[in-house]
Image 1 (cartoon, rainbow, N blue to C red):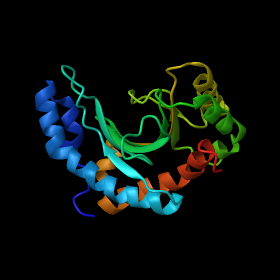
Image 2: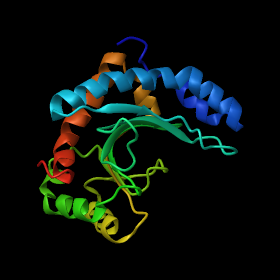
Image 3: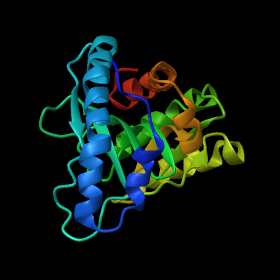
Image 4: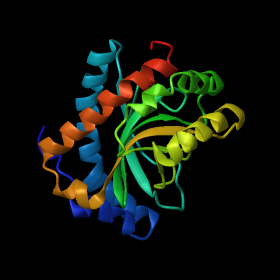
Length: 209
């Protein structure tokens, strides 16, 4: 893969005022990279999980006024979409790149999936301290996976069981400054290492653990 190095201008997209100007820059600068990542990691997930995965690059088509604050490519086993399934994402806000597994609010069966993760909480203990958890895919804010001794992780999973709109994300955030210093090879290696560590979580929530 070539042309996949993150640059300052990729993140600067989110400082552009107005929906149309921001979307034009996003489509020109960022979307080609997400499409390349989509093809690359769809093959990766299909190979390691033994089921065909499909990439879904965010189009932001429903937006009429407010410009997007982030963008991404998601990976799921459905050609039609990803929000109703456990899925993986690579994307960016203006301040960071995220590499995550996500259970978002449209996903059916979240209660059972939360119970499975709580029952396999030792998986979280094995994650490096650089990993994060979050309860909101629309926010760049997140908590260290081991913060408060892991209590925040369990709180988010308990919330996933009881709150209809609750979400759960686990993965890694790479600050903008670090991402632009990475070579293409370094970023791809970091993303794949992150996904390698997230595979047991995916297998657990899908009942394959």
